[in-house]
Length: 134
Length: 294
Image (tube, rainbow over all chains, first blue to last red; front, side):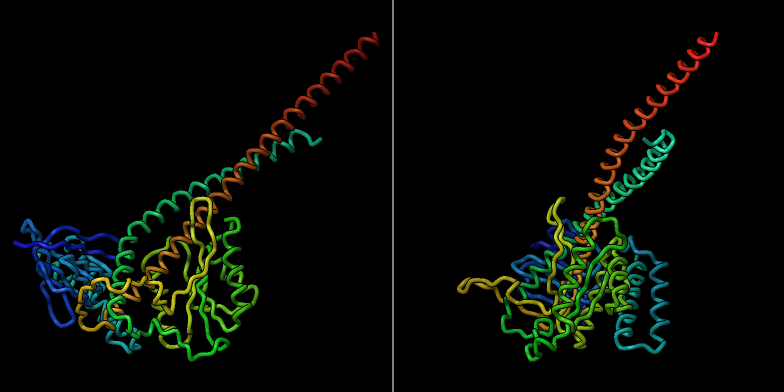
């Protein structure tokens, strides 16, 4: 199967770097899969789950924050705020974060605060959803 | 000449001080190492971000964006500038704080229509004492710079900028050139300058790139992170410079303490010798006087 080079960078570390077969990305309006020789694109990605199928056939799952992906000349670079493996996620913390965010959303907030709470709720939900599978 | 007791007291107190300066030296050096490692971990992210930003801009040279708007309609004297001033939380770091504050004061004198956002206790106290208005809600420590803090600061600055509260944002920090040289510098954060990002020669083949959902949405994602990265870099550089200059200050303090100890121990030996000689002379004199009486 055709492969392409993928690099996933988060603000504090290099999350992944190798040749892969397929990458599934979370976008604002659903998911998107990238395979080898994709058209050149720069796309904004949203909070969610990425699935990487490596050249060896392994599947790697990660939870990512907001960012964008750059697809140029069969090289894909995904730059995100944060990236975690499901096994590194603390479920208890995610649950607390979810409750906190829900609590905040119930109260009156400025638009900016509302956006922030919404984003942290979405992060917490993704973390919980992905860890449920394993 | 001072007596032996006094000299001994001084030696003891200098030794105690030396212990402190020596410990501070070690603390600074371990903090420096940690901060440098953190910076190394984030470097690839920001480097890639910068490259990506210049690529996006290259493909849309005519793009207009809020963060690139230099607001030429506003007259020079009406422009409101915001300065992020990065100082330390403590003194004892040589001229480190002084150099940064000097630049801030000069800017403030040239542009009275400015806001100061001070990071670190020393700077905050300095300006508060002088009656210079400083944003009181801007309370951040300079210790252990983290991505999170940089992001909070960046968000605040972008918010002020977007709302038009300030038209230009600068950061005054200390750039560590090498382990011996660190210079206080001022850099403009916002609005960004297009020409900074490198131009490609015309005639070079440029691949087509599709931007989804829109170029503006992409820039909205990249630029806040870029600014955050810049602030984080500046915080870490400053923190490293602070630790470095404290290391140097403490090193020279330890050295001069050693020198003083050396001098004092010679003095102490002389005083002791003199006391012994005097005692012997007195005893000898006394013995002779007793002999003479017989």
